[in-house]
Image 1 (cartoon, rainbow, N blue to C red):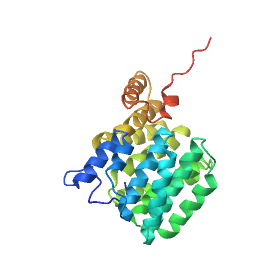
Image 2 (cartoon, helix red, strand yellow; image 1 turned 180 degrees about the horizontal axis):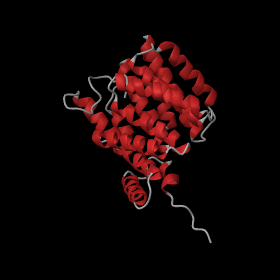
Image 3 (cartoon, rainbow, N blue to C red; image 1 turned 90 degrees about the vertical axis):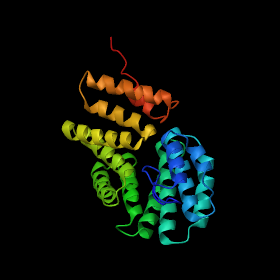
Image 4 (cartoon, rainbow, N blue to C red; image 1 turned 45 degrees about the vertical axis):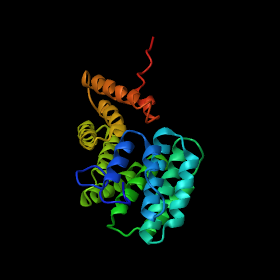
Length: 257
């Protein structure tokens, strides 16, 4: 996660103990508990807390008021261009999640917020890769523009590589593979999904492992596809049905007469 309050992001030895605790809770779908460890008295801490609660909305379709409150706090504390850009990026992500899940159509707000973020976050800055990724999500899922999405994901992939951000790399691999699968490029899709899964398993990102398994299953043949899907289903149930949207992908097709 970008804009952390302490050193490191909790995924490697030597990181700040607070960040390690936050990461362990976040990776196990305990976003509220992770957010409770952060005191929103500085801009970085408030931004990280808001980002955790926005992510919870995307994965659980719950907690919208808490995310809005945390985001308003982060926006009030942001002073530098980077901080204001990061807050705008989270504002765009929350509006995107609301639109994606059918809570309320906030597509225009999402585009405007990410546009503000693009004007504030310098090209080449660490936060730019996350912004590019989120602009790709909007292009793919709200604007139905796969070519624009692919270009944004590739920029994000390059930025995540340059800044050594493995978690973001797992997302760019995943979404580039999804576009490849839609176009029938099975080998490319299989490679991307496998890379995404490998990174998430190495990081211990449990809440993201089930979606990676399910997506890889979509690019595999039997019996491997069924094995991967069953493993995804087990993890999904272990986490109490999170992420909520994975249920549709794990539901077997109805039998035909």
